Image (cartoon, rainbow, N blue to C red; front, side, top):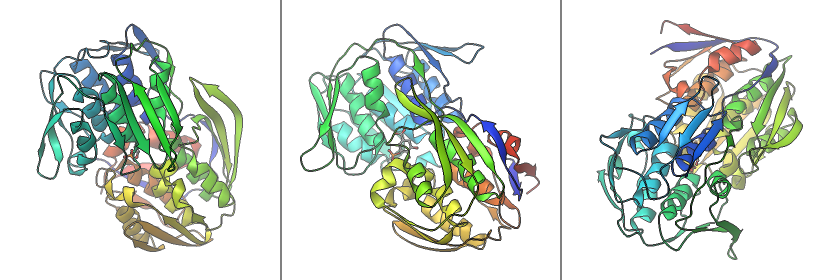
Length: 443
Ligand code: S3P
């Protein structure tokens, strides 16, 4: 397990493209595996999480190949056509992968057992099993509703109208994907809008999905069951959640000027951009366009003075994965940054709220926190750094602290870089190409 250390540097510069969007990549493999005909996917994230989804879809009968030019070609089995896998499906670290797949198989008359790594095996799954049971699906889980879980898909599923109790695109998507092989109309009501890639991509493959305002606030999404999904081409945008690391690195490293190309800017994902602008970041979006049905643009970032702000809690679903690196940015701002509405951070790949509070404190930053909030005091000067952070199988914690160590007074190390490959293969090389100094070292 390699340990990595970031040395403080000055002046990042250059143009890069970060890997494909993880959310869009998972969904593109799942829906193409259910479509009739051959789908061609370009820009797919070839991180471990997405590769686990590709293996799972192959195990259930889809034909998936990668061409030498990086295009993925998927021949699907048709809605209702998934085959029972012969062995246990190991989803590794992939929370999105396993939760969406539980939905997909929930209404196929097959049995399927999912397992995962130590991080995934402690994450809550009842949030998806609860609504999925209403289709007629039976689950056998470890105590506490944890993986490994065997899904016994419903023979004669009945449509469901599910009101979301947590703001989670994964739960919403699991229900919609279960609705695919269910007669009639499956409905999801969400009080707080979450990323809508599932809805967009279902429409792209020809399903009828209607999203309309819900009178009590929020949105109602209706899917007409048992559509024919038709193969189509998909262009995966670069992942804004990965772009967040070079963006913050450039903001906090004096003398930087960096451009990240073709980043997906779906408004339900782009809360970090609004927040950084509120902090006074010198950040411009250039070349805005639509690619594969999603808005994309090139993000140009220059370092400069930042100020502490209150981040509105209603923005949380649109930047939920970006709070770790935002809290790093806040440590360099002048004044206090208050982040509230963060309950979901406690159940990500690790307890991210605790991980950031502990790690930032170890690096000399003043942080206060409660069950669902965190405050970071910035002085406008670089914090000390000088700590080794245990990342506990969490890719975003690992990358956040390597970004921090690129601009602190003393280096910052992480104990295990392995998890980075789940979402951002090539992270250190790409960042070093901009001017960081992130190297392996003997822990
Ligand atoms: C994701 C949804 C989010 C996010 C995760 C990807 C998705 O999780 O944290 O990285 O692709 O649907 P929740 O839906 O649990 O908030």
